[in-house]
Amino acid sequence: MAKANYLCLSLLILLLLKCSHSHSHPFNILLPSDSLSSSSCPTHNPNLYYRPLIGILTHPGDGASGRLTNATDVSYIAASYVKFVESAGARVIPLLYNEPQDTLLKKLDMVNGVIFTGGWSKKGLYYDTVQTVYKKVLEKNDGGDYFPLYAISLGFELISIIISEDSNILDDFTSSKQPINLYLTQNAISDGAMFQRFPPDLLKKVTTDCLVLQNNRYGLSPEGLLNNEKLSSFFEILTTSKDANNKKNAFEWGTKNVPHTEDAVRLTQSAANFLVSEARKSSTRPDSQDVLDNLIYNYIPTYCGKAGKGYDQVYLFTQS
Ligand SMILES: *[C@@H]1O[C@H](CO)[C@@H](O)[C@H](O)[C@H]1NC(C)=O
Image (cartoon, rainbow, N blue to C red; front, side, top):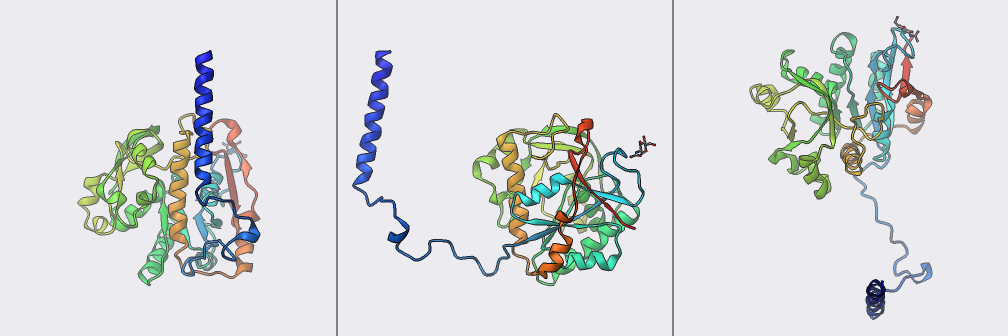
């Protein structure tokens, strides 16, 4: 006991010494009136847009297996995608997959990036709309603008099919709600790549710890990509996993396997930060009234996670 006290005391003295030592340095707290320059706020980069908007394409159905509605014209966005965008400093404009094309294109000209979500729909109007939006995104980028597209899970499958022009490009994988680690390629941390911006300790952990939830039936194998000229000239592989990989989610609680550790949450935030940092480079500066009229805040999400399956919250949209 006495020894412990002694240790504490010596620690205290050490701390005091450190304090008095730093006193000799010019390390004083400046009062507002003392400040050297009139403002210490960093100047904004005029090339970046600090009010970025992300369009999220709705998916057919209610996202709750008919528990909320069976209406045929209903579509949904899981609220977790909206929170994902908000966590990185952007706002969401929903793009209804079944709204008139000129309305959809008008909204597309209001946003600074797009997300294709997970889901199951691979044909019909949904597929056609994904293709329309994808082509528009490509047009914007080819025209010299900056316009990121995040294609997650089903979204990634669909753009793989569209780019490869091969509906059989996907292989069967058996991965269901399984936390996994990733295998990063050399390209993963190359200039401009998503993982380059990840905190170094987190980058290391994604390769060793199971921070990512994958829940995919289909995936794209490295061979499948490399053997398809159209895909291999378009994509760079940044990461692979033992099965196809999926974004884990800090905002979903229904599935027990969703990793919710601090590192897993940081991974979600880092992925969101990358998307939004890319969106800030887009030159789109929409009319502010148009934005207010179309923001996701015009809709109210519904809690559907009590049933213990599926998404926790969804936004529903009807197109009449
Ligand atoms: C939707 O249809 C299913 C199957 O017929 C039914 O069990 C469910 O109650 C319906 N949902 C609603 C909200 O009516």
